[in-house]
Image 1 (cartoon, helix red, strand yellow):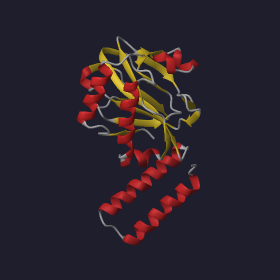
Image 2 (cartoon, helix red, strand yellow):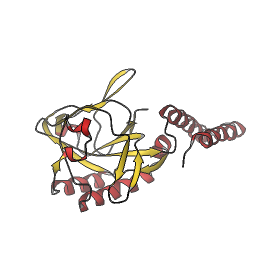
Image 3 (tube, one colour):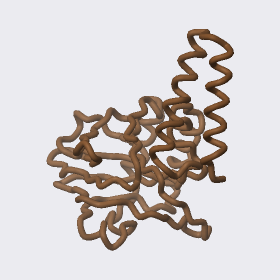
Image 4 (cartoon, helix red, strand yellow):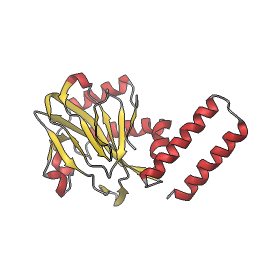
Length: 226
């Protein structure tokens, strides 16, 4: 499931991110890439253990915890702390698939990457190029969202970032280990949950709503790993 989630961050939070990232120390983005990714990755990122990365990451995680659409779509068990990257001067990231498991530095904790996420922090008018292209059975889908908007997609997807030919593309990126690792099952649960919410808003037949809600939780009980 490829899904855009609007307004994860407020304008004030976006401004805070930009201010902090403007004074951050940036390093070669290949420090976090696996063997496959390092060969096709040309960008910069903020070190994971820097105070700026930790502060902004905690702000983003708090915003995600309050976002019902994110919770419904990803069913998070664990979220890898957000990292921050910058593409400029023809920077790009060629075709790759994200590593299946990420080690959370200093903790020994391993996180399975079921869902990949990119939170855009620069306005689309601030840079040319930089589209995220995610491939599935129906072809390549181009994503370039307003600042503060998030896109999620299966971490198993082949994807890339086009070269940035003007300006700078700023973003946060992270991964989610879902309680439901299968993307098809997560998509089905998401559809059912959204249908329940629409029925609740229209005060539809109560017995039908209770029955559908029961089906949702029984499916989740069947598929969830905690």
